[in-house]
Amino acid sequence: MTGTMINIAAILIGGTLGLLFGERLPERVKHTVVAGMGLFTLAVGISMFLETEQSIVVLISLLIGGLLGEWWKLEDRLRNLGVVLQKRFSNGSGTEASNFVTGFLTASLLFIVGPMAILGSIQDGFEGRITLLAIKSVLDMFAAMAFAASFGIGVLFSALPILVYQGGITLLAAEAAAVLTGPMITEMTATGGVILMGLAVSSLLEIKPIRVGSFLPALLVAPMLTPLFARLIEWLGWVI
Image 1 (cartoon, rainbow, N blue to C red):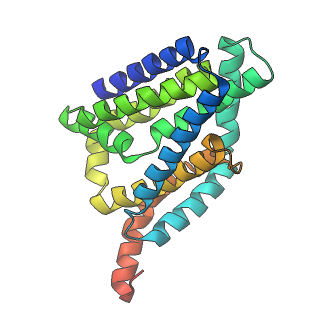
Image 2 (image 1 turned 60 degrees about the vertical axis):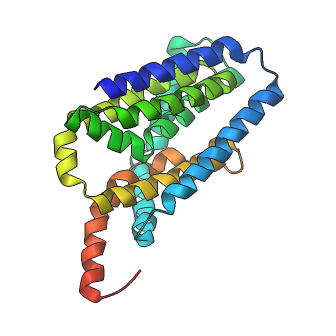
């Protein structure tokens, strides 16, 4: 789990720097920085989605994942976790409390959704190589710095989902590498790209509120649907 621990350290360092020096930045600068991160996240999400070879898989995965997420109340559970952490580690109320939860949710979703989190964790656990997670750590550090300057200390607690998510994949790397094929990872990546676009539109650019956390199960649904649709297309001779 070396790569994951480096990733966590980078988030904590970046978040701490953002907390220390963020107050010196005018609000307009903070808003501009977050908007820049939002535009970049949107661009990354679009590029990830364009990798899909079966767009119908992405669509159905999002629909099924969204239904499962709402059934399990994932968005509410994530927000409640943010509220619990806010009450335990921060004395703020009102806008400050809201910023804590927003920072925790936004950073957590951004850091765990994406191919580098999955492939990097598998690479770390299966081969002992941390190259992808090291690159991700640098990106996450600067993102944490920008988010912490705007949203506050809640961003630092996004290290907890990172530990559970990436650490879990790393520990199960051998099994994951044996199960996940190239096409499965491709569709999972494309699905993650749509979730990132939702994160950018909802939390970073503040265009339209979206319960992005509810779509997280889609990341599990996509690789399961991929071989099923591949066989269906082969059987029917369709091209989707």
